[in-house]
Length: 86
Image (tube, rainbow, N blue to C red; front, side):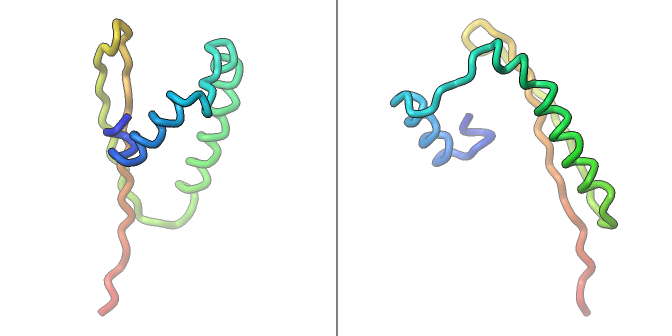
């Protein structure tokens, strides 16, 4: 979690999770809402790509076992090119 959020945010999230202030959705809830979340994200990404901007997108994937479960994560880095003012 620290790699994705950064150490301070990961520590804060972990603290909230351990205090039970944040409830993690059940597998059934995640399964039901996955399509809606994917469509929403796709529409937001489409909107940003349709704008007339010069952007570069780099993707990197990694999979590793954590507590007996294999997780695959994709990290997206987006860089926007700005014109230099001279």
